[in-house]
Length: 149
Ligand SMILES: CC(C)(COP(=O)(O)OP(=O)(O)OC[C@H]1O[C@@H](n2cnc3c(N)ncnc32)[C@H](O)[C@@H]1OP(=O)(O)O)[C@@H](O)C(=O)NCCC(=O)NCCS
Image (cartoon, rainbow, N blue to C red):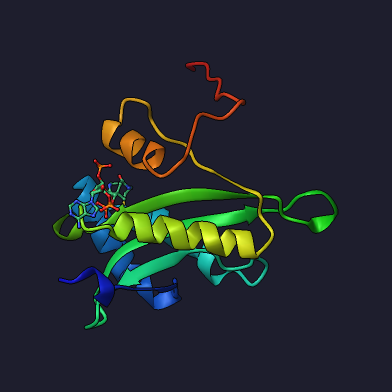
């Protein structure tokens, strides 16, 4: 598979099966309910500007995706976007697809007026930490606090 044969496009409702298939391959567990909600919220909602993207091979097979949203700021102007989930089919990783998805997501959010993209990563997840730090993400000034219930 050549990198140039990958097309990045906006996610559509009928990408649901491909996205859940990749997620299941990555996490080795199926979570269609989670993606049903995410698609309703981020892809099908007419109240949000679409930001989620997929990476498609020349034959139309979806091999990666990124889901996210613009946060509504003061006066309805979005200054910040959130990257919710990114995933590349394990058979297609290490070929630059994740980087391209991330770059196109950043460019798209910038074109929509966002000045910053935030995401949450488990610091124990060394692969994801390396991916994001290798793509110019750094620690934020705000930290996540939690308390066990
Ligand atoms: C993080 C993730 C998105 C990265 O996707 P990817 O397509 O492998 O990313 P890239 O190929 O752009 O970069 C990964 C590495 O491959 C390297 N690479 C890129 N193109 C390459 C090429 N042509 N040849 C060799 N290596 C290459 C990159 O330099 C990078 O190296 P590094 O890890 O040392 O920094 C992917 O590993 C993934 O989906 N992980 C699971 C994430 C997850 O849990 N998501 C939730 C459920 S879906």
